[in-house]
Amino acid sequence: MKHIEFFIMILALTFSTAMAAQENGTPETEQDRDSYYEQRAKEDAEYEQGLAMRNEEDEKDFWKDQDKYEKDLRKRDKKAYKAYMKGKRDAYAEHAAHCDSQCHHSGHYHRQAQIYYTYHEYHYPRRSTVVQTGVRVATPRVGLSIF
Image 1: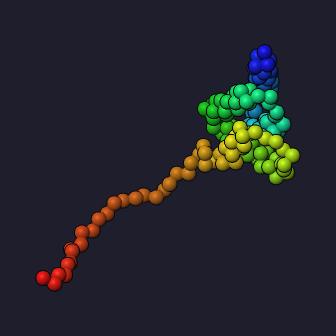
Image 2: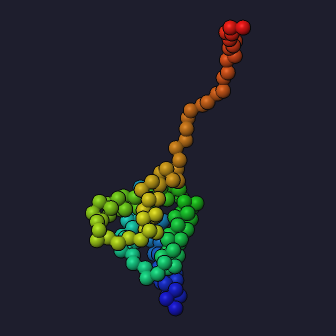
């Protein structure tokens, strides 16, 4: 029964967010969009940092849904995704600066935090501009022998 309540809560949250996004419309400029997604990321991070699930299964489902949201955002709008991930990275770094032994985060949280800390390398690997060629120069062999 607790699983059903959790999923109903997630569904209601998703629908209310979608309805609010439709009412507000899309941000008019690129800068507005970036600041919207950065702010949304900070709010999401704050919620995630205070999250205390009762069982492992619910927490796995939550993080799976979060990954799905991020992948969908990446497919829809890469610039918005980049702004969202930047907001997440900043929020998680800020939290880590004052998070001490009183913070009790799960392994799932720490795995996700690691992704946010390194999202540039994780999602946008740097491209190498080095051109490699294979050149061989044949040299004569010289050998000495006593016999």
